[in-house]
Length: 524
Image (cartoon, rainbow, N blue to C red; front, side):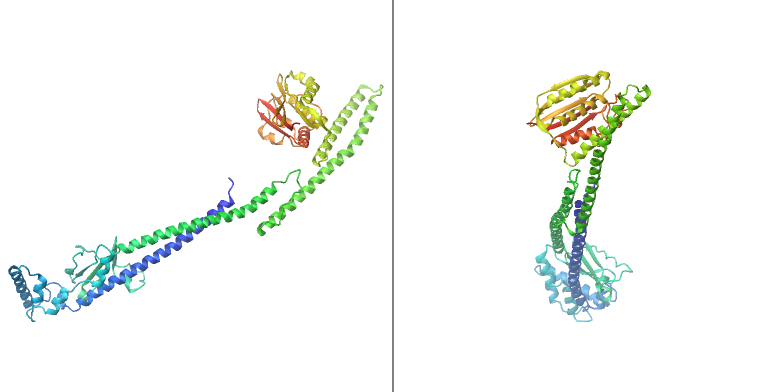
């Protein structure tokens, strides 16, 4: 199957451009995503560090297990404080735990100092951090502070009840920065960071990334639209450019198709050809010129040889006729001279045909045009050749309408005789021959159809070639009566005569059904 150069250029361009735009867009999107994640991590880390700085103000035992390292008097004082708080809440229904805590005042070593108590109450995310996300998103960030033993020391109201520490980065992968060693977990639209605080405590801060994810999706959609636009515009440009490139090749092909036996001297114009195709055009022009010279030499040789052989053949025929007038020749000598006479006549006929073809090729076939009736010509040829079909008991069917053309009566009669002779020669015994003449608009049509064995399909394109013998194209079982003078030039001469009259000859054939020749000529 033929491949299209234009389609390949277009496909290569689209594929390569798609790969390039995909890589560039993917790199940009990945870089943008990483930049967004770094900004989020900086923000989360800043909030976590503020919590860590508050934790450093607490006593050590507050950061460890609840009862580990706590003085007994502090634990007793805590229990007494808790009972006092419960009593005050019962006595004063309007009181709150926060208002009660502000009124409490302990002196070491019997209770917690006022400072640590206030630190525990102030363990909150930075207000600016919380307010920023309150305006941007529907959910607020959260934090959780775990002691060294994993118990929860403080947490925001919206903190998750269960936490799972993210996996540490795999060994063997060098971190790009120290933040690559901080455990970070992305769970859907939430990003969570775990930092280590004083005394082995863990500070977990998480925030929603819904706004950033939405922005990334908008960027992704924009990139897709931009890529589609670039790809469409570039494809149209590539289509236009490939059209321009192929147009030059098509023009060369169209001009090359003008080469024929009648236009062997045709040359392709080099002026408007691209530099890359100039060498091809020059090669084709050189080849055409060589073909034209070779055909011209062949035609000239055929014409000269045919012309030069006519005189010797005429002399030979004259001497043979003179010798045959001798009544004293014995039977054997007479048969030899008659055989030589038949061969000389056959050779003279061949020379006449070759000379006619040479004249037709060189546009020197002289036509004695006159107004003639095709029906009359066909009828005269039928009367001349009808006796040849009696040996096969052929049946003739004539449908002749009066149709006038401007042409050479002698040459047109030769066309009809050749076609009828073939119909007789290649017909079967008891077959039929149909001769018809009718008008088809401004054209006149002559048809000669037989009921022979037909012609092989692969031989039909070669029927009008010179020296092509139709016997090879017909079935070997066909009964033929060899007509004299058949050299494989009859149909070639027929086509040349029809072409010289500006007409056209075609053939159609079906195996075992017959063959039909159609001659179309302009009417007058």
